[in-house]
Length: 303
Image 1 (cartoon, rainbow, N blue to C red):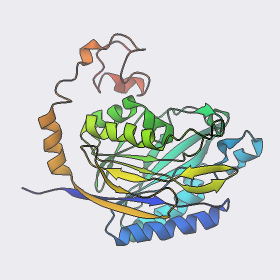
Image 2: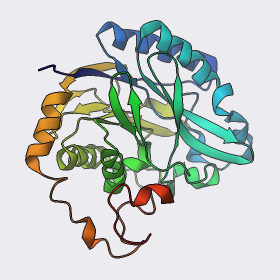
Image 3: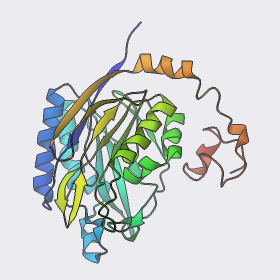
Image 4: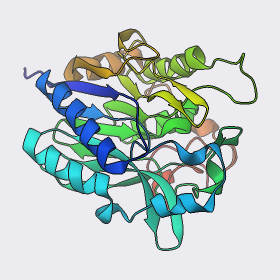
């Protein structure tokens, strides 16, 4: 019996507001992770510059590019080919008159498999993303890469169990979340680091799937990002973690065949009661998947 293994890498670092310098820095850390054996390497959310959503400033719309013209995508497609690694690349995307917080999924041969656009858009002190980004229109996706089927959510998507489940229903074998999260400007006593990790570890448990998150560190515009990037195994155990301030990489190997068998044995997908989906408002997948996909992925209501 052939065992299908995959090595997940995570990058955590601080960023300047110079896109060229940030690309060069990320490339160095990707090389480091690949040197440790990583085949799928996750970098933080919107690493092209400072996290600009702390305020509403129309000048920031100039940071966006069409996907195939984005400097981060152009550079990392070349690097993916050179190293033979899969790279989900978080970008500020411009599509005509619309702007999105997106991930371009680059396969190990440099193929751009497509784009996922962030579905859940936060709006609060320090995270004023609704000013910049439209809610995603792609639905959740699980990408068929050289190293397995990979689901990618983006930051605020991390908090929603429907996002993880929708990707799993499409056959995801790994869940990845690029992130930019840290202090809460309105309340210096509020530290969400632990609950941020716990909710994602819950996705790992409920779906029997490895989960990894990449965050940034450092202080930008008075906001301190708390790092703590991690890799969780399929039972929710933190198997690799960086601290709140260090820059570096994590790498962990998983046996996807073994995990697939374990997932089947637990019966979470066998025992799902999709027949209890009552309406579009209650539907697990209706608001999150394109209409043609809702029935395919288990919603039996007419949504």
